[in-house]
Amino acid sequence: AQKITQTQPGMFVQEKEAVTLDCTYDTSDQSYGLFWYKQPSSGEMIFLIYQGSYDEQNATEGRYSLNFQKARKSANLVISASQLGDSAMYFCAMREGLPNTGNQFYFGTGTSLTVIP
Amino acid sequence: GAVVSQHPSRVICKSGTSVKIECRSLDFQATTMFWYRQFPKQSLMLMATSNEGSKATYEQGVEKDKFLINHASLTLSTLTVTSAHPEDSSFYICSARDNSLAVYNEQFFGPGTRLTVL
Image 1 (tube, rainbow over the protein chains, first blue to last red):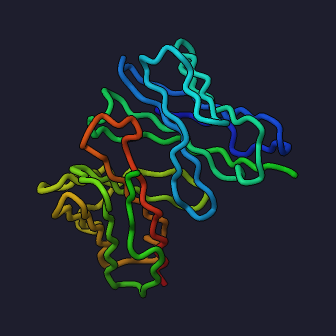
Image 2: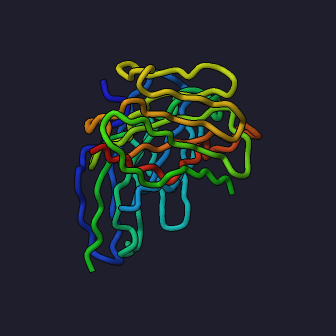
């Protein structure tokens, strides 16, 4: 089974609108971390936001928020007030086990977001 | 903040030659570095985990004799694609783990190297 599933290959959003990018995960570990990265056409991976499995509150970082629903094993990324510069690929990733243990990341297949002016 | 560099950013080589890609953590020590491969419009696939001073751990299906990894210091890991062929053309990305403290942004990614084998 896939560890990380992103079911939206492509998404479009109007500038200044909010958009939700879906991510579900599969793990039997109690400790894990969930990450979202942005990859523009240049290829660099830009860290956006992190959610730990024991965090009770949803993570927020500026215009990014993570809608963490543990029982449903989902970790959707919400981008508010979309900007043209948000057009990029977005990857959801998971690390099983405790933080900073050097465990590998599992990446989803990504969602290509296009912001329409 | 933690910065990871990769060199070269782009390389074009002839089939049969070997190419070395460097991954450096510039302002932190990285006991562990990861090498990923990404085909166009696809996800990052982990190739191997590189630990300083020991042999790399390769993922299933990755030929260790073809993709040589050397993590000789806490700030440098290299990936050598030996006898490269056109099917090795891809985007190679490294990441480094900052093991100084429990930083939740655990892997810092390099900017990637685009390899084209003619």
